[in-house]
Length: 455
Image (cartoon, rainbow, N blue to C red; front, side, top):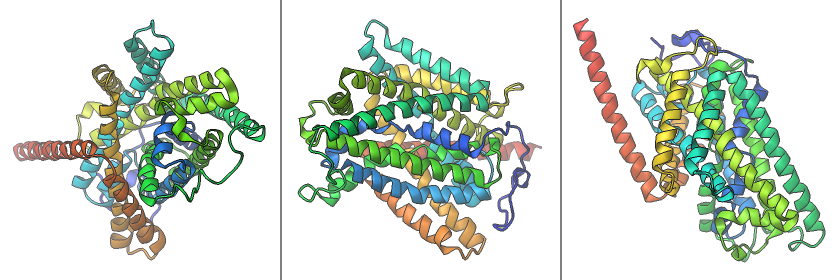
């Protein structure tokens, strides 16, 4: 039985919480940073560039800068809790140990809403994009290919997954380097209107409401750094490793997001000229690199969604399912560890199956699915900030008011603002999912109580 509180001045170990080491510890801080970068996708703005620049009235670099600052506070709170609770399960574990078992379950339940459908959404986007390049191949074929390859990699072991992550990351950074190099060269040779600060601030277009609405969209590009915390039982380097991995990956990807969107906004200063916002970035790439760069950025985006990002998402949700089932909050079979590869293979296979069913069901309606995945993570982030205050300040009587009061309060306010800017459908689905979770938890506890009474 896991303990509920470990003194904040105690260097916590896995055994302090009633667990023993089952997963294979092979990941360094460097591996965690790579995992975080892959999860957030260094070239993610390429896929949503058009919608963000339109919403921000051209000040897209500003929105990503604000988004990075917004996520900075949540990342700090994750770092504090990962050091106190070095246990797999991410927000589920942190809320359970930092607050109570009910909130922990509901937090895990809400993050499932995000993570369980994210791989399917990524597979759909990648498969549909490949359909446009290779129309003769049925879309469902690509869906099966993506799921099969990623599942095989994840079951083979976290170290094998880390190797795949490195390969994908190098590929994405090479593509990004091509764009940056050709973009700078083009700007120096007459493309666009030269180097200005308008992507950060345009006095004629600036409106705080527009910028913050766009920031609410841009912030979602940063979701994924929290996935690093699901690997807490597979890391080396002590309790601070997860926190370091989270902060480094967030800062690095933030710089990459800001840099590429800044250049793109300079290359095509008038975003009104885009006939299709969904392909806006590829039009920008073509301005400085012709068909070569257009095709390269398109293919890179497809691969980063279909393989790299989905690979990391599948690994994360399988660890959350593992952590919750180990605590008897989900079927025990989901906690099974592969005898050879030391991975939660049953959870991984379940996620693959769900991805296939959801992918086939929403193949032609990805916009609805995208609404579902946004609400869960943001709800969990709110709980994370409350857990920091409760565990360190209230229970632990901490005097570190910066990390344990101001940071979580500021982070909570920012995330709440972002949630309020989600559309009604996303919030409605989130509320329904929460009610289902409460009902399930109530039934689960009632069943366990009757079982204990019989014993």
